[in-house]
Image 1 (cartoon, one colour):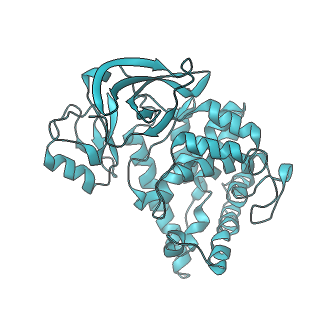
Image 2 (cartoon, rainbow, N blue to C red):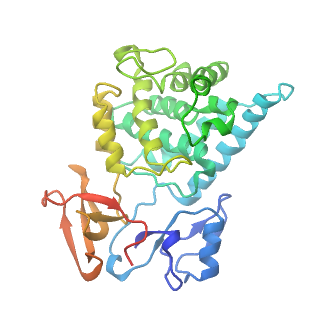
Image 3 (cartoon, rainbow, N blue to C red):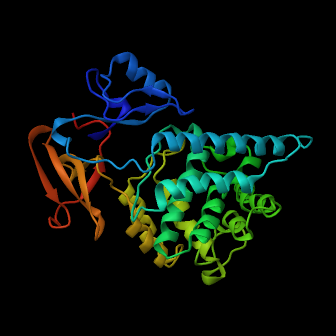
Length: 363
């Protein structure tokens, strides 16, 4: 099987995995033959990609540790809870009787048990939906990336969960800020930027009042925009003044933000985002947590279509544990023409590099 953008699907292709709606209901079953009507249905539901069957890639095994069902379940609960919090910010008379600790300990517990507990490597998380639910999917993704770093760093299960809960709630302060400002495509004014930067303190103030939220979890909201050189916000902390949770959060938060489509820019490729993290190593980000991120997050999972050197089009077959950025790729096309499939190990062929992730050109 291989991943393919919904925008490039053609009638007659077969689904390799079932497709679920945002409420967890099955939209299309596995092995269903796609029709124009089905493709429109996927577009209308906001899906950005699916996995299709292809005899040339039938031996490729795609990890489903974070299944669509689990994603849907978690995202629905995050959305419901966040909307209640948002209403309490908008309407002072609205009673805020929400047990954030209980809810998010349960949610991150699900992610920990299904994804992190027995996974040596976490797969790069490709959002199932459009930017409409960015905040919800971002909070889920960041919690998993942060959790993967924490597991790699040898944290106990309880400590991983403290970080994970905080990561899921790190942007909750944004619910108090006008969405038109958060999604503004142009440059923010000084006044707008000051307002946006307040979300860290707002989130912390909300979380620290919750009896079942650990104070370190609340610091994920407070410190995820702090930077090693002291030029972050809100407190301009520097180096080891930033708690470990805050330094982990900075890496996880920035990576997911960079690799997500936003209204004001397209997503960066995974390796481009990793290069940006490396560029900020020791300046913005803790080098050790970048190292652990790259070691424990698979940015090019099997099934992902890629371009090598701008010419060779193919699909990731498997990963090299020693270097997740240099997978084995099955070449299907060269210079726009189909070829007999063959595999290239990028850990051996060092002159070959991933130059793009394909949206529509592998047919």
